[in-house]
Image 1 (cartoon, rainbow, N blue to C red):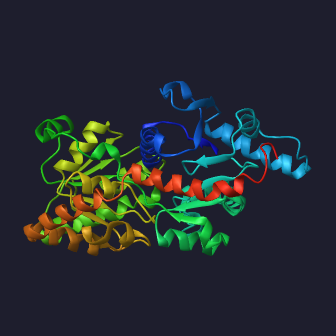
Image 2: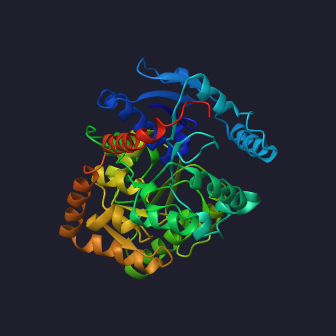
Image 3: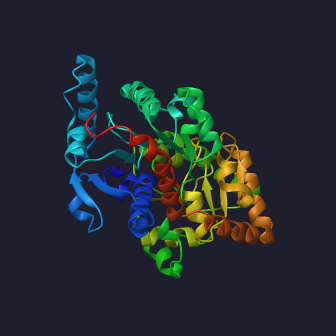
Length: 394
């Protein structure tokens, strides 16, 4: 088949979405000789993706233009004018694309067989968080997923928990859902040693800090991390600096204000968005990753920490045990006391901390972007006999 590869905006500030897309696309380039399928890349700025192996087509990538494309698709359907196509459908016809692979969670409705990926359906599970509900976001997400997932030829989920959520909310038959876990980010694998002292001096950090790389959304739960740090200091005489890295998504001011009012006072470093080389060093210099998000079923930072030798304390959300196994200490993100207990355990039991680091490294190596792409190749192979039953443009 000739497969379209749809990428969202390539920007590091996107966070995990950027990392997954970058790694998967690079793995596709490296493995392209392993498949008989050919590929056409659709993204906003294809000229920046230097490759002779894949045809590239420019497609609007800004959030506003994606919304317009969705609205255009819905308007055409409303008019029942099947001869009128969206811009993406026109481009697919011009390039003879048989099948579309949406690498990220953002996508455009299209009258063509396609593969979708679901990173989370938290607007259904936890609709009270403003980032999945406010200003029409809940309705937009629900309207989109309601049609988009039900029409997909293949839906990728990372865990059985994720598969169950897709089935529960959108009644997708299980044979159309493929389990392909989040790959361990390539930037964390086989990287040279870093100078921790240089990092500490650059950001004025103390040793043995607790690290939390997460954009400032409400669901990232920074407030309960602050509460746990206060309990450690006041009740257990363990003072850890909190190092928070990530872009502001609307909740930074609230977190800063909460931290400023904490009694006892806390040592909190707000680093903002940090470059990749600093992120690597931040993991390696940390006492532990404290990933206390309310959202799942998968998250990338624990995999990054595993690969870089940083012990992981993570939220016990549905899917976490599947993804992280016994390589992480899992806690209830609603209960600062459980986070306190986990930090105390790692502090008091150095042997356990070393064992967690070793288990994490092993788990990080078990599933990479190449494994993910080979899983996509298998799904394409399975669907190809079906797609040969009609010509392009119908």
